[in-house]
Structures are given as structure tokens and as C-alpha cells.
Image: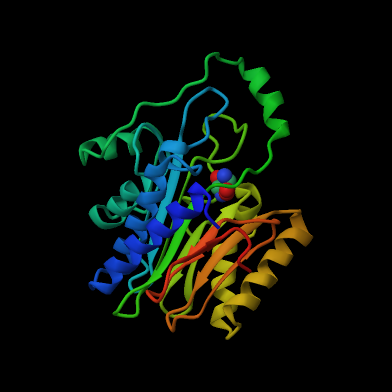
Length: 276
Ligand code: GLY
Ligand code: GLY
């Protein structure tokens, strides 16, 4: 596949793999892989984030590593290119897990994170109009994520998103919620989710997949069982990346397509929109 998105995915996979190959930790590899996707403007994350109904881009991101179960996240952050780096800084520079809204933006400003000019809608809607429009809310995929395994055997997961189409201002999805959009534990595996956040949150999907792995279920079966439950119980829709500390992985989605890729350093990186 040779779409701009597929080319960008391959470039991102190369960045992440080369970092791991040179001995970087898996959170650093996950962060830098996601940064390529955020910067491209080709996905619903970073520069390419969707607008909320008041015309503002507000972004969510999170990262978690499976050795100490450290995690960091930001929600409703504005005006920066790399929310995933803000999440990594929350993980490493604070005792907290999640910072939100203008004060998350202020945190990013303190660390002099690269800014970008916000895209805005030409007109503003009344709150009543926004409330009506949000009923047509549907998931539109494009959230970006990554999982990685480093040379010390630590798995990590990260995700970054501009949210979903036609969301109310202030809406936050699964991506910055640990256990929902991402989870990583060296005793089970690393999971990164994309899809309709409101459904993913209600089943705490990333943690649920890890709980299946803990019982000895294979990544493919764990992912299939949880995605089937998501569809059957709440008509949800999602896709996932799952990687275990012994290097088994799966890419699965309940939607017809999910752009994704993988690379173990041999040959060319694989990228496609129907890998399962
Ligand atoms: N933007 C919603 C998703 O892909 O998860
Ligand atoms: N999965 C991303 C979102 O719903 O915001």
C-alpha cells in the first residue's frame, strides 16, 4: 500500500525500531513513533486533529510503561504539535498521571514544547446548536498509537488523538484514560486502542485485554474476545494493537479498516489498512 498515510506509518515504524535497536527504552520509542504521526497532519492527532464544535482543536494523549507501571496523560490540551511528549513529561517529571485543559497547556508551555497555530472554524455555534449537532456524533478513525518492546523486556503503549467528529467542547475520549485507551504491564502486555472512545471507556478495553493475557490467552484471542464483547454489549467500535513481553503481537479491529503497521527490523516495515 502506497498512500501518504501508509508511507508515513512506515517512516514512523523505522524511527521507533531504530531507537530500540540502539538501546532506547520502549516509552521513548513509542513517543518518537507517535511524534512522526502527530507532525504529519495526515491523522487525527497533533497537527491534523479534528475541531470540537466550538471550532477549537483540543487533544488527548497518554503513555504507559510496563516495568514500574508508570503512566502519564494529558486531556483537552491546545496549541501544541506533540501531545504525546506532554504525556511522557507528565509521566517522568511529575507524580501525577493526568493533567487536563488550560493547565495541561500551561504545563507544555513550561517545558517549551513546540506550538502550532490552531485551526479554527469560521463561525461559532450557540450551545443549543452544538448540543443538537453532537447527537450525530459518530466515530471517525484516525487516532494514532504505538506499542513497543525494548531490549530489557519492557513493553510500552501510547496513543494520541484529536477526538471524534462533532464533539462538544471539553469532550474527552478513551485515549488519555489509563486502562481504556492504553495499558502496559510487563506481566501481561501492552495495548493501544483506536475507535469510538465512549464505547472503549465503558468496557475499560485496554485493561480488559491485558486481563485476558494474564490468564494465558493469546493476543489474537484476547483482542477478538474483547472487541466482540464491545460490539455485542454496547455496539461499540474499536481497533487495537497488542504486544506481549515475549514478542507476540496482534492488530485487530471491529471496523472494516484500520490503518496500521509493524516492523521487527527485517525487510521493509509492513503497513496496511486490513492487517488482521
Ligand atoms: N478519532 C477516533 C478514533 O480514531 O479513535
Ligand atoms: N479513540 C479516540 C477518541 O474517541 O477520542
